[in-house]
Image (cartoon, rainbow, N blue to C red; front, side, top):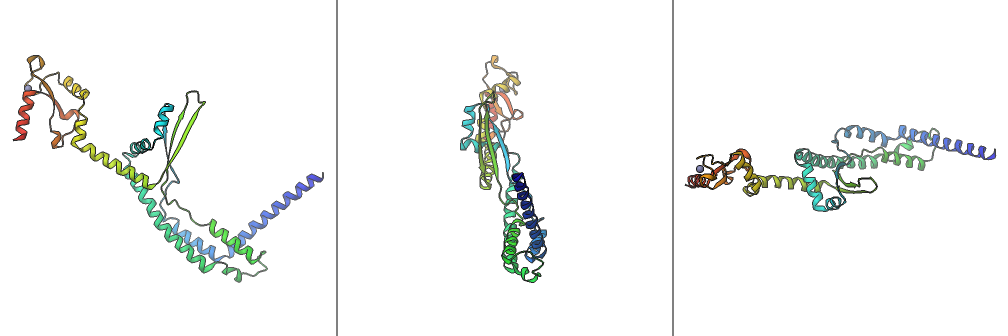
Length: 276
Ligand SMILES: [Zn+2]
């Protein structure tokens, strides 16, 4: 019985304590010029900030422990991100510039905060009838300071990206997770690399790399192993070659529509024409 009464009293005490604290906060909010100015400042600034997520998440699920280990390597992470962001470069460029923009606006906001704080802190305490406030000046200042901190806007001003590389064994018994955090600088490096890759893919060197034996065979078969100019085949004693209709050196691509089968003679004839 004694314990029950003690617990009851304790709970009542706690409830009373919170009631008083909440009441004091409410009073400070109503009286404080500083908080009133903060509210008007927030009204102006809350729509200025661009919306960014706290963190942008990517996942890389691996099909084996070995792949998981390989994919946790820095170079692999970088190229994984290049693949993920490719095709979305404009979106990511915008996210980077939005973060930069938010940082600028936030710096202005911070400057205003400093200004209104110096101008107003504690000032309103002197102007409120003291019997109305059930608290000391120190208490008032403490609550005002705390509310001033809590009520400030905190927009996202940095781009944060996290890649989770993971592997779960077939029975689910073993789970491996690694998180890799990336900042704006990292994302910008990824975007630059994507641009560089694209330029390379436009290059003659890359187009020649695409001309593999397998590709060559596909084209020969498509053209029924016959020269597309004179119609002869290997059984007529000619050597067949695969030709870029628009030459690679003139910007031609290694794609089916730009490839055809020619015999060595016809191909040579074409080359002579081009070189004149
Ligand atoms: Zn021919």
